[in-house]
Length: 266
Image (cartoon, rainbow, N blue to C red):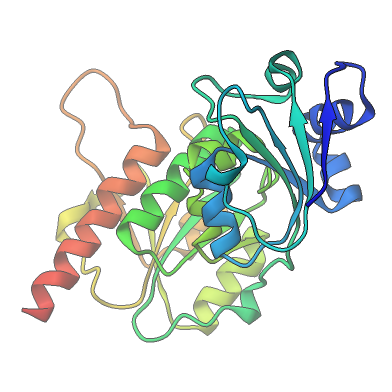
């Protein structure tokens, strides 16, 4: 096993990692994305992704502690070089460049009987989207559809916020029009989370095939989703604020679906 050492901040490999972290366009062009942390790298490998390069700092972690698969390029970094490419606090000493896999499409989704799907419209902040994916994984959601995305699914902050949950989920990017048509064709009920003309969420039946649709905190859902809705639901707000963070709202609604489905099985 060959291990190359890097001690210079001006090394092209260091510059490449920093550039990939900051540029969606470059990630797409190179077909590579950045993953940081032992847990995230392990989940990435388990999901079938291929490692391209491993960068680690021996002052933080030994190579034996790092999950490896295939034959990636391995680079041992000085502390200063590692600090340059690490993008989060409390890092574990390892950053990987990973080859992008083939993206799922709506028509390639295989969801089985009575699926529970989460749909997000135009969510902009990578941290919010990552938190939604983390909760979706915890709830056992069958798929997450990101409509009209304003951030790419390989954003490092998204991967970080999802705790690697993005690698375990079926995630599709599509337009709202495509998703509405697919849900209707698939006979999946559309439940839109909105304040207007809505009933409290716990009165809705989540046991049937269901898509829970959420928009941004600032703008809510577009008119095309409101018109396509089979049921409009809301989470009661008893304070001065009128909405929750989108990831919190998603968790509340999905755990209600999980509760109803668990009770039905008993």
